[in-house]
Image (cartoon, rainbow, N blue to C red; front, side, top):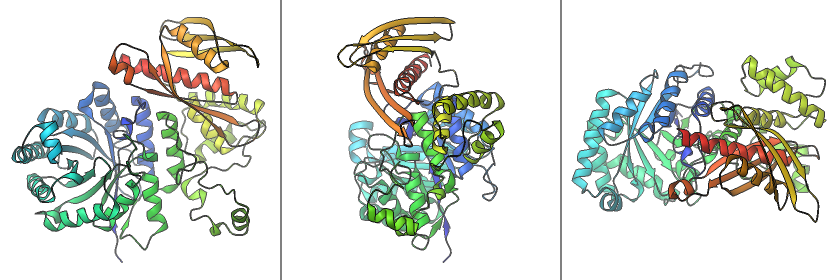
Length: 527
């Protein structure tokens, strides 16, 4: 059976960044985009250029720096398309084009709500005005760029016949991809698949465009809905790494790709994703976004390839295929076996970093090597998981967002006394060393109170989570936090910022995560 190409459209840097507490810097976006390109993603939605100057510059940088890259794409034969999101207005569309135009292959993605509830209460326009705006927007976009995607927002709750009318008109106006979003995640698989059948059969010019699926995960059905759409003619899927996104998130790239991988005869499509990069980019997005995945997350969760039951363990020891439908190495899950130790040199470490798809320049490598050597003094066995965690933590602050840097932490604590923490921070821009102390119910609270005093802000902790990297009493601890600023400004008070820190001492990991979140908050304010 001849198979069609399925285009993988990744929106981690746009829809994924809309997750509460996620604020990626331009450097972090470029870093993620480079790995998306290397793993074979076809289209990268790099941002929403009109939303802010920072987002515009981020999309522009990705277009310039990542757009031309061909590493890992030799078999595909062309670079990744860089896409920007735009409302259906000329100002938005022009701004988006001005950001993406530097990429050899670029796309403008225009959206306009079409459901009656959105037209009446949000846009306050009628159906005919909706069609007029959609056509005008697509025509203007087409005058700037050949590659135009159109999304009727809240398509799943739009009257089907009206939706066909809108889509037929935008096809005539020049749209090349039609994306049908289940914006509120209300569909079930049979319903979503049937919607595509109806639209393809009843929309004028439907054979001239690529049909695309975009699903939200409010009912936990995003991946199932996307697979149903593929079975009903969709040839582009919009996904995010780890399924991050607004509310309950989006369709997970790794779940769709591996569903297709494990059912090669069931779906009439193929894709160009190099699955061995999946775990690495999952970890990168976790580290940069500060959003951990649950242990039982399909494909990339820490328990995805763990076997607790004695019967399961016995079966796997005899033949892995008894209980594993995917070999861990297929998605790049690192080994827990000893790979490096105290006597390992620079070349051994450099080779291991290359195996794990971690790229560092000479200065970064020297810095990383020193941190690695410190870890070997505290931890007897260094695994691939340790190296990934260390790399993610070491370079989480390697750009302009590092306002404060931790110099020292001194803790006094006991079982029946209040803990005392003395924290020393370096304020980089002013070259100042700041020292203060505070008490709290436990060493971490005391340290956080001391930091609040040092920076002169009232910060509230919204979320705190500790994970172990590997096992053993010398395992690294990975801490994720989410913070908000106590402020009379409602917008500032409602905006959460995530942070991440790794150390073999969980108190130090906790302080690193807290300072990382504060630095992100300050950087966002500065921009």
